[in-house]
Image 1 (cartoon, rainbow, N blue to C red):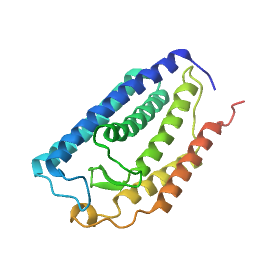
Image 2 (image 1 turned 60 degrees about the horizontal axis):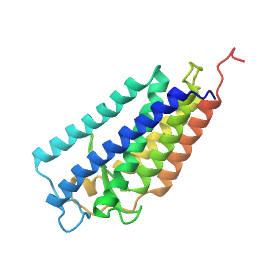
Image 3 (image 1 turned 90 degrees about the vertical axis):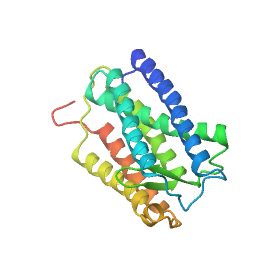
Image 4 (image 1 turned 60 degrees about the vertical axis):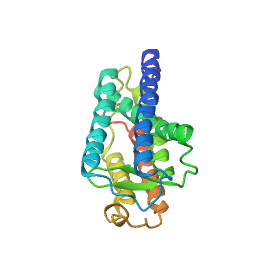
Length: 219
């Protein structure tokens, strides 16, 4: 794998942006919980006003746009931009929980439940799940950005895509399967840690195979 100092510096600055952005995101959640959960954030979820929900959905879209934008500006080719985005997203997500812990002492445990995303339906799960996914994204994105820094070919094979996409599908299923806990204000069912483990294993396997794959005709 090629090591490029410019890419390494950009990875640092992308991470700095993500760390700061994680605090901005955490501060919004602090305000929302002060309004809707003054005695502490717990399930079942309380219904927010329609205006607040719509505002939160648009904010989530804006968050992704900002992470994509900094990645596009930082990368010099398609796959390097993907790598930067993976790093930016992963660092932002992990530091979001770190900042929440610093400011309000939550989560107390990695098994505490959280609302992870609202689009297209609410996602819920223990904090451990997005943290593990984000750590995998940071490692994979860093390797991808460094590998493609000097135009080194990166051509994932079809099996790599299948493993990764199936893994992502399983992870998403683990977050959105319990609609009763999000749309009807019920207590969540026990989280499917087996789906988390399977999804992470498939995504990791897909990434490893993608990095090892060599197109036909290459040396």
